Length: 158
Image 1 (cartoon, rainbow, N blue to C red):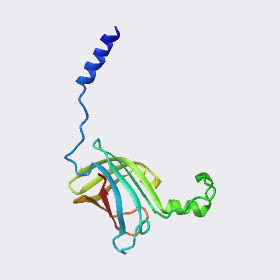
Image 2: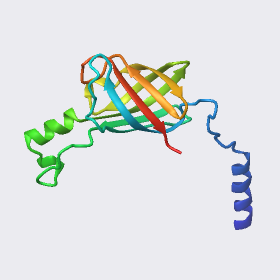
Image 3: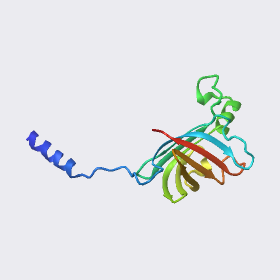
Image 4: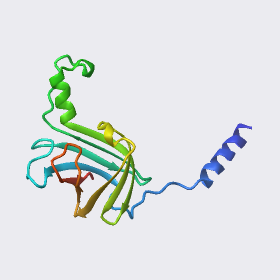
């Protein structure tokens, strides 16, 4: 009986189509932040050496995290016991969000499922994106921290 059960399971698995990666969508993959600049002022966004990672899955899901490289460590080594100054530095120096996306030409439309900037949770956002060699160039007309347009450049992770 065991052998028959294994054959049934094996035949079911063989009949299930594998999910193939969407290789026609250039944005699919992992991208590491190289630079981020407020375009009107030319000022760096998230400091002079910002950190960040974008991940676009072939199934239409994405995640994004941006942060300053110089975030202060918490004296208590416990994020629930941060001082008002430590907490403010982290809030001002980082943002993370995830959700679903659709790429149409140069327009990236995202639905934000959740964000560390709660005003974005449940909203739809759009960015202008294009590929420049192994780089993704991302333009945001309405950055969460204000200051006008934001331009970010990401390198593809190999």
